[in-house]
Length: 133
Ligand code: 5GP
Image 1 (cartoon, rainbow, N blue to C red):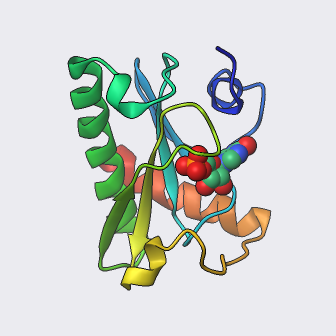
Image 2: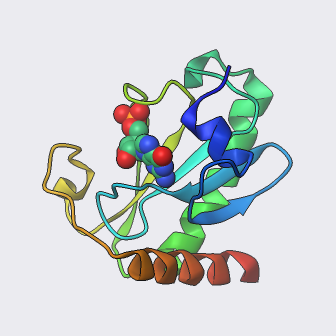
């Protein structure tokens, strides 16, 4: 099944890429709750996280952990919040959101605006810490 995220993975739609491996891909959310808000997706399409097979689900969490540790090091925050919603895009994804307060994980909050240059700098900083790991 083709989704906006399968197009991002294939490079047909641009994104601020953070990391990838054989099975998973991470990139900045285009409408972030906070600077550094990242989405982790499986390359093999699944629309619902709890329909993934056990091995893929475990491996996706381990990949998300490495991405979260890189975000945590690159972006000043207390910790990385994790959410799974999936009501907008029917392609499994984990939201990784730098948190300073509980409201940073409130999907109805007013979202900060970042220029393309700011988004690129955030991505570059996270990629640099990811590549050190
Ligand atoms: P959910 O499906 O979990 O409710 O939300 C989907 C998330 O994907 C939203 O936070 C939204 O900002 C993000 N999103 C939707 N379309 C795109 C896109 O084309 N590129 C990127 N980077 N993020 C997107």
